[in-house]
Image (tube, rainbow, N blue to C red; front, top):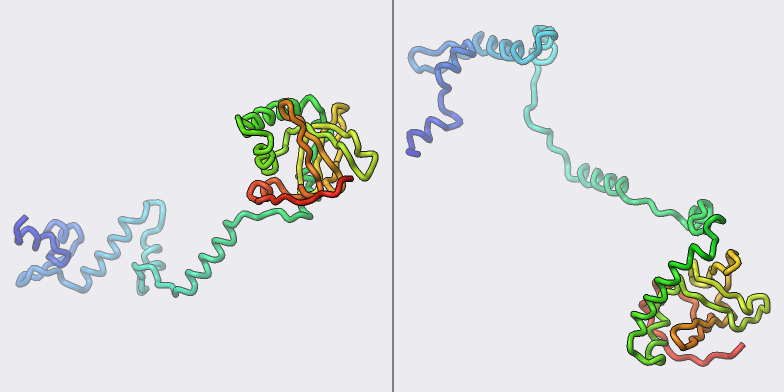
Amino acid sequence: MDNQDRTELSLYSRLPENVHRSAGLEQDTSTGDPLIGTNAYSYVQRYVQNAVADEFDAQKAYTTKVKNKVILLDNPSKSSTDSKEQQKRRKRANKAKVLTAKEKRTLEVYDIPLESRKYELFLPLHELWKGYMEEIFGTCSPMTFTQKLLKADFHGANITVARSKCPTYVGANGIVAQETENVFKIITPSNALRVIPKVNNVFTIHIRDSVFTLHGNQFRYRASQRSAKKFKSKPTIDL
């Protein structure tokens, strides 16, 4: 494209004659520029009349919306402080609300419904846990596996209370339905939910041909915390 074509496409170049004729603008015979005055006023009025639908009063719309009024074509600039406040409010509105511990207790989020406290419903979970243990055990020795077992997930494990300072807990057996920092919630073969505290209790778990003992006093961690914790050997006072 040569320079002459670029001049014709310039923003400040004179409009073609057909545009002037359709707009009703007269041209100065000496310069060819449109006359400014009544013709410019009639052009704005005619443009509004053509833009407004037939069912509306074009003259009324022009008189109330355009005549003798300053119309801003650009968006008004806003201060940076206003935009920052809007961003903060938008972030607070979009932020996910987290339930408090009191709200969770009120809504009974972690409570197991009565109709779900059936031993047979948790048997598939126990089978999954046994496969999970087989993958962890692999070909390592029982002593090496003990360190891995401390960081494992016990949901679905079949545990038994071997010793306890409270005689009513001794012999309790079932599948772990929930584990918290201080308790095991198990489903017994008699379809009962029992909450067994870890404090002052010793648990046993059968895996393959080995029996592993868990001392609850040294096992008081959440599952998520236990997976990243480095356990150290500590002396244990037998119950």
